[in-house]
Figure 1: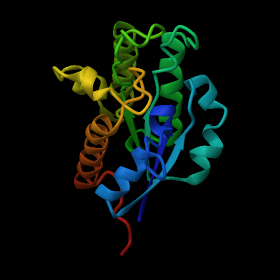
Figure 2 (figure 1 turned 180 degrees about the vertical axis):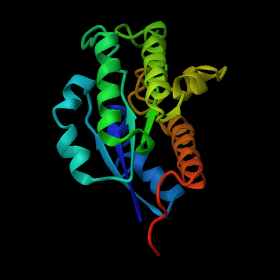
Figure 3 (figure 1 turned 45 degrees about the vertical axis):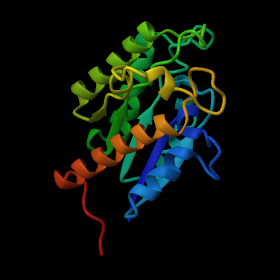
Figure 4 (figure 1 turned 120 degrees about the horizontal axis):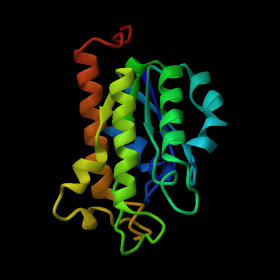
Length: 197
């Protein structure tokens, strides 16, 4: 069974009414041949995540790692400079190995509910993630633009908190479908070994 570590902030860690974090819960239902491990910590920037990276990710020797940060790095109250953010994502990717890494751009926000975050700035952080993927040859999911291009994207951002940042069921359905599709593509490309029967 292939192990996938989902590494991130509250978007990765949130339960949203489920018994365990909704991201890995839904992924486990969609992909029975994989074991999903949640390594999300609410409030984390990439700087903070760097301090737990070895223990929470590398020590587990996973087959694949999803990396989803940016919501906190780009915020006014936890700000991590764009260049530092990009370097951190790059370092995570190189240590895991690009072929085992799926980089995911941060989601847009409802700016009317999020005074500390703007979609203009989140788009810059999403672009930085895309650049790291291009430079390293890692796998990539442009979650920001998939969600932002939906005419009702603000409705998709409504979750238990209804704060314009922590989305609920609809947003996670889109995100987990994108991850599941990417994992299938990776398998078909035979870039990771199939698990031994």
